[in-house]
Image: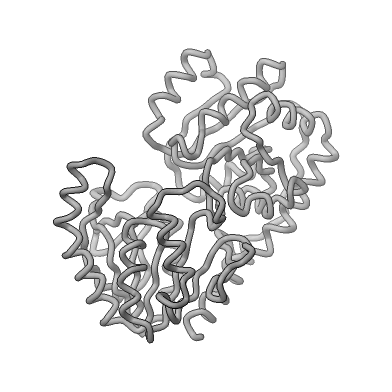
Length: 372
């Protein structure tokens, strides 16, 4: 089987192998285990491999380099108009030469893939929509257009669309799905963390407005002002790094907030094992892996009510749901800091639920999708 991947994820080439953002590549390595050849259509603009990048395992990858594009300014819009014909042509060729078409959405490449796949109604297809599928969510026009195209069973035929969570009034081709980070063999007993002494929080994600790392800092800062012995460790990089550094200095938080940058999966796993809470006050998510990973290792999630997060946390039985109102959220966190028994109950509930979603189960589901 020749398997075609259409993605906006930036790639690089080093030491004879293609690499990209590790959570995406880990998943695609599972898909590619069951195919003979991979045709990969994506931008190739990464220079150096970092701690959060890994390589593909497949030995037969044909890379079709395309330009990245966006419509964020008048200049970029004009540039995009010249790029689009070549990008569309490369996508069309790749789809024509493939036995199975796989789209990664939402994204600019995913949008073009949603349009071009209409020309191949007979070919089996899958799409992974990694964003928020909630129709009520405020999202860019391109995201809403991708949702509409993927749900339209007249235009989009022979397609299974994998989405996070279960949503009412979905078309028959929409399949509730999940993602995973760990195998069954990774399960080990997690020792209890009591709420005595220093209370440790961790944030894992891009340092951007969408993930709201500054709000995570404000939560811990307010708890500190109330007399709690707390600390926050932040993993990730992004455009808000300088702003965060300035905030830490100007508010004299150097002794309780620590920036660690991008780190390996093993380092992040160790952080989940050593911290009490993982904080994700994000404005938009699909299936937040940091929440599921934290739960797997007994690090209780404190997360905003976006996408399928309320279902993941069982409306608060497996964690704390943020309202994104500072005083209210601080009081909610404070209430559990005073109740170690409730904290342990939530942690145990989180561990029990998250360990159903292993890579073993995920791989079985992927294999069935490719063979159906």
